[in-house]
Image (tube, rainbow, N blue to C red):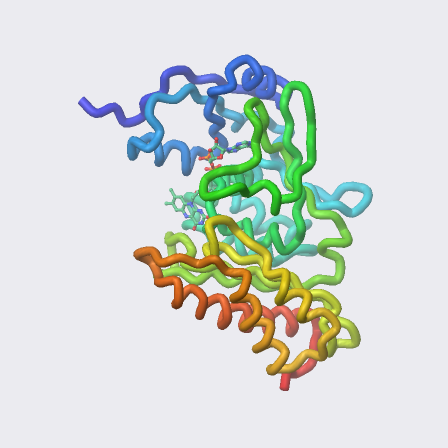
Length: 297
Ligand SMILES: Cc1cc2nc3c(=O)[nH]c(=O)nc-3n(C[C@H](O)[C@H](O)[C@H](O)COP(=O)(O)OP(=O)(O)OC[C@H]3O[C@@H](n4cnc5c(N)ncnc54)[C@H](O)[C@@H]3O)c2cc1C
């Protein structure tokens, strides 16, 4: 008889300290937050026989707040539904709410966490490209240590992240210099509108000078490579340029250079590159409008 969820042992922690202690004692524990990845994998046989550590009851991992120095702190257990309606997110980094509402369907958004979205190491994670664009920093905790890792250093390869044995993600931090004055737009391109993972995800944030010059532009892409990426060359090109259709077209073209797209059943490499070029331009135009830029000629 097939076993649907082959859970060998089940542990539940109510505090970060308790979870870190259990992870130190039993480094093979599989952390479960919302379970929308882990349980699906167990059901499909991609994870066989697991010792589970549920962190769902750890209250201190919930909540989104602004710290005294203006840093936005998002608890690892923040669900996509929480993020979509949160006032700190809505008032300061609304592009993350856009990304959150593009994710899954309402039932999945109610249970799936941002921490799980990052820690599964998947390039299509809807929160990742936006967090890349904001230079988010991840707080990782073990029983011995707490360390901060920039999100761009966290993704090591498909499904591979920089969590060491015994570590868990507790918070996602976005410092004020990384969001103040920036406006942004997220485009998720998928084969259907609901309940589909991205064929390409594009998060663009920009800051303008005198309404017609790019002071700063940051472009985060999902599914343009084995991990989410930033488009450094395109960003460098954009800085200080007068905003025009020509400049935006060049930014879109240059963004493709960062892509390491591949062909899958969802799209060919060439089509994904076309999407990078086109959607970067579209997202940037919307971001400029949101930033109060004038008409783009
Ligand atoms: C029907 C369906 C639709 C979906 N649609 C989308 C979509 O549109 N976009 C998208 O991006 N994803 C989608 N997903 C994938 C999934 O829902 C998300 O990746 C979700 O954010 C995972 O969060 P979770 O809390 O459920 O993770 P879990 O399944 O609990 O965990 C995922 C991984 O992260 C680890 N983990 C979780 N929390 C921590 C932590 N705090 N510290 C260390 N490790 C941790 C777990 O051990 C596991 O390896 C979909 C899934 C389903 C089933």
